[in-house]
Image (cartoon, rainbow, N blue to C red; front, side, top):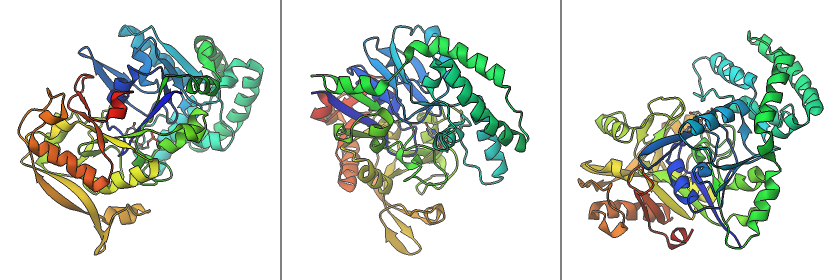
Length: 431
Ligand code: IMP
């Protein structure tokens, strides 16, 4: 029987999933992305070099690992080609990569429309990455999407493209944007089919085969974070997919019973990019210090990230929704040097104590954090590799998170490099 591990973001994205996925990818036989697209920005650092990935799975650096871009993703083939070229320029060209024939494509008009919708929303911007993710998922559910496998059948693709453009060009013109020329798009996608064609397969069949093999290790790599979930996040300030472990079965094409080990990636504090409520947000010198020390600037957009204290209300909520078995506590070293550290245990909303996020952002924006305050620690912990060697105050902080969230901490990250990782959980040590 195989071993499965799902790694998901449990806050607002950018929790450091790239690093931790890469850590486990080194031992994995297969790494699968199952939702989102090139709106994700995963940074991976090893051998002193920094790599950034957007739509390509984090197992790409290990020549033996099979990497899958699953059917639940929205994939921009142009950007896949660019990402592969960038990796090649950095010396990464020996890999195994497969793309689902059922994944919806992000077409050039989707990014145009993403930008245009943001403008016509006036002051109420979502702050999207403008990669066309929302418009691509909308077309998928409106059944006018084009899928990766369509490109492999030119006549079929021609029909689907003509049908899509009939609608999309009208929409573009209505919004004052330039329509697309059928022939130019068709020819370019035939070129892309030539480049990527050999990678486009029925990935569900391949994953299911691997699942049944003795001793295989399969990693499912989530993108974004649970609070950006289209269903359970801070709607409408969310992405257009479900970053939860719950979407692995659909987005990878496997049965739900295979999902039994979920690692929730959480920063030791909290960050958010884009708009939307953020109860523990800080606007003081501490925010500035954490932002600079943690290099808290978006990988995709370069925007400074908003900074706040660890929010256990969110942590409890996301662990309940996604079945998180253990936490991977990231950027723990960034908190060193602070006089005191805080954890938000509850909110106060209109005079009442609440312990789960409300459904509307108007209420969420009124939630005031209730904190416990703990002593900080001064020591540089970036060289520590064993839990027992952490300063006492840092251990108290970890224990408090476990106690308040009722979920054990299985991994602690003390720096960006692969080696700067403390594995506490025995199950994870064996993966
Ligand atoms: P979209 O996914 O581009 O539609 O953007 C919707 C919201 O999700 C915006 O607030 C983005 O900043 C946020 N978002 C999308 N992808 C990521 C990510 O990988 N990390 C953090 N935030 C993200």
